[in-house]
Image (cartoon, rainbow, N blue to C red; front, side, top):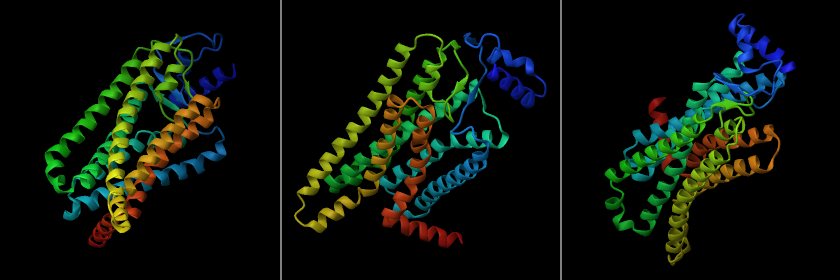
Length: 338
């Protein structure tokens, strides 16, 4: 009954007296009834404590601004410096663009919810957020795989690098990453669209996670879950296999270099990329294991935070601090601007 009262007061405050809509979502007399024709969901967020909301707002706003500005600076530095108009930096600029899109699907909505004291997201908005989240997340993975192939060609076939990694191929690879990610996001969309009724409208996270939406369904979603996880597993396996094969060949080639200085110089070109790959797949695996083992929705939300917020924020720092070319380009760009 307490949830029904909260719903009614919330609707009255948000919709100026339209409390009659409350039973559409949560009915006081039959809380266990299945809910059909749901038009809104409630994102529970990271914390219910009202005293923490201003701190969370400042923290996530600063994180979001740092991420967007950091990735934007990398894109502008690459565009402004002719020396960086190479395949590796072409992929890096697209990775930065995907990171901006990735964090922009979740954090702005969470900030709006905190500032307006509202946790509502429309059904259409939820689907849009879920599709965008999967699209940009998959693009990150595909671009990292293509960057590993670029490093493989540069180190193992240096004399043919510019011939193999020509602009036409690079452009096609980015298009493949976009349309492949788009297809994966639409598969998730189709699975969620099959859900015709829900047991509840509360999503125990700060964004619309497809696995959480399946848990809210009022019928057995075993087949849907199998398709969802099988699609994700195949996608991740193919991408990780490409990265593993590339670095296996790179390592074999580097070990054949006679001097230690030559080995260090060859491997240093892969250091930033390898760090980002470990961060991307490490946090992704952590989110998966946390959701499988932990029984606490709040802990799952915190694990998701590492994957959706921290990783995109760290990527520009990793590439700018470990890459001399990017540091020089950033300094030149900032000097011209200032």
